[in-house]
Amino acid sequence: MPYLTPTLVKRAGPTRTDITWNDGHFSSYPSWYLRENCPCANCVDESSGIRRIPEGSIAAGLERVAVDPVGNYALHFEWSDGHSTGIYTFDYLRKLCPCPQCRPQGLEEPPQEVRKPGSFEV
Ligand SMILES: [Zn+2]
Ligand SMILES: [Zn+2]
Image (cartoon, rainbow, N blue to C red; front, side):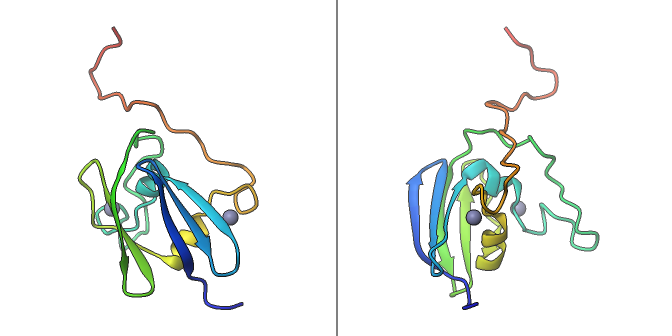
């Protein structure tokens, strides 16, 4: 198996990033999904590995503000909620691939809008 690296990172839209890999695999990531799985120290407790972002807490409309390569091993994303400390290694991104082949159970769709505690439906 050759070292996996993206041959194309495409900004499919603010809420979606597409990656074509050097083995021909194609991954299409919703922004909320990448944000929810942010690997940075603020989002994952380093000693326990426990994720601090509860599932379903990122709204479906979350947008990618920027994506930049980090060396030749990772991508750096900036999100519309202001978070930008996550470095996503290619290895990690490939493990996150949400395609039906990699993740037959599919993704759980996030809420359209995250309701803040105490807010009312009018
Ligand atoms: Zn993070
Ligand atoms: Zn896949």
